[in-house]
Every structure is written in C-alpha cells, then in structure tokens.
Image (tube, rainbow, N blue to C red; front, side, top):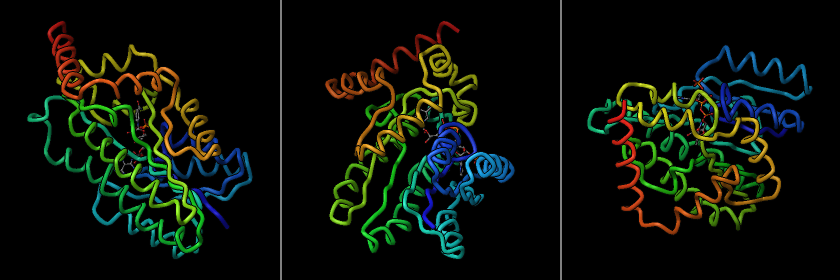
Length: 268
Ligand SMILES: NC(=O)c1ccc[n+]([C@@H]2O[C@H](COP(=O)([O-])OP(=O)(O)OC[C@H]3O[C@@H](n4cnc5c(N)ncnc54)[C@H](OP(=O)(O)O)[C@@H]3O)[C@@H](O)[C@H]2O)c1
C-alpha cells in the first residue's frame, strides 16, 4: 500500500495537511513527538475517511531519529510515495543571548533531519522511478532576518537544498517541491519561544499581521503538489512579497528588519 509521510503532523500546518490528504484518500504516516496527539488525529481520520493511518512518534531534533523512523517504515513494509518534511521550529531574540543548545537543536530538526529523511526515503523512489518530496520552508528563506538569525538561515538552507534536488530528481521521475508558507495561525510562536521578553518585537508583528489559517496553507500545498509545481509560496500577499524581496539587496533587507525590530522593542 502507498503512503504519504508527514513530519510535524501533530499540530498546525502538518495536522491540517494530514486532514486534507486523508480527505483525498491518502494513506498516511504521521510523525511528531506527541504520540497521544498523533493517535487522536489518526483515529479521527480513520473514522472519517476510512484511510490507513500509521503513527511513528519521534523527536527529529535528535541525531538518529530519522533513521529510526525509516527503519520502522521498512519493518512494516510501507511504501512512501510522498514525503512531506514539514516539522520545524523557530527561535527569536538576540542571537548571542539565545541558548546555543536550542539553536543547534533547531538546525538538527530543520536541516539535518530533513536531509536525513530525504536521503533515506529517496532511495526507493529512485528505484521505482516515482515519488514526491515536499520541503516546507518559509518566507524567511528569501532573506536574512536579524533576531531570527538561525531560523531564517535554516530556511535558506531548505530552499537551496530543495531547489538543487529538484533537478537531481528529474531523471528519476521524482517530483521535488519547495513550499513556503508565510505567517500562519499555528502554535509556531509558542513552540519557538517567540513570545518571550527578548523576542516580543517579533511576536507583536506576528499577531497583528495578516496570517493564513493552516487549512488555507494545506489546501495550497495540495493544489501545488497536484499541479506538479516545484516552487510555491503560500498566499497571494506572500507571493508578491517574495518577488519584491528578490529585487532588494540582502544587506538592505537585514538593516530594515533590524531597525524596525529595535524600534518596536524601544516602544515596549
Ligand atoms: N506558522 C508560521 O507562521 C510559519 C511560517 C512559515 C513557515 N512555517 C513552517 O511550517 C512548518 C510547520 O510549522 P507550524 O506553523 O505548523 O508549527 P507548529 O504548529 O508549532 O507545529 C510544528 C509541528 O512540528 C512538530 N515538531 C516540533 N518539534 C519536533 C521535533 N523535535 N521532532 C518531531 N516533530 C517536531 C510538532 O509536533 P510535536 O510538538 O508533537 O513534536 C508539530 O507537529 C515549520 O517547518 C515552520 O518553520 C510556519
């Protein structure tokens, strides 16, 4: 049986995507840390749509987690037709004052595990000459973001890696897509600690700005995947924004972002 594997499926965009794909009759493999939440989502999707849903709880911020997830799919003989690397975490505040350990964990989750998952699951896709890989980036993939320095850089990595793999996948009929949401109403800020004192300038931005719902983002991802796009920015405002950003020098963007953050902080 064919499956779509979604990382970060216990909340936010990943959960909304699991619901969308189940409604489109995809069998699913859900990966995240919160086993209870995964089971709850899985039971609801099985009851509603009659699809097969497996849960593999894993902490992808740890070194060998991707391999353990892969081995579990092998043990259960599950064929992964679509891999969605969605799990991700942010961080905000002055870089020098953030915990080094949590910045490195962020890179392990957002980058190293994404690379490992892709490497492990792409092998069978190459042999079969079919499959899709979707990597979830962010608007921060298009710019340096002072006071979210590591997170933004991790998404630049996701963008570059995915755009390169898009070409490597073509001779094997593997469809690779970079999907970039903009601000989305999820638990992302709380999980990232972007509601702490140091990051308050970032969080107020997040709460007042126009944001998509995770359902809207999941629908766009599904449509872009069906249309075999290699690159999609979610939301028309974000698409416009990404085009403007491409015209501006990175140093100018970084200076503007830093100044507006400092200004907001001074007003608090
Ligand atoms: N929300 C936004 O404004 C926004 C904007 C641009 C891009 N994005 C990107 O969209 C993706 C999804 O974010 P979201 O907004 O849906 O965030 P979210 O609501 O915080 O959900 C994050 C998901 O990732 C999982 N996750 C977190 N740490 C994990 C770990 N160590 N191992 C395995 N799974 C882990 C979480 O589940 P557990 O806690 O159960 O592990 C959860 O299912 C991320 O890559 C994010 O960078 C979000």
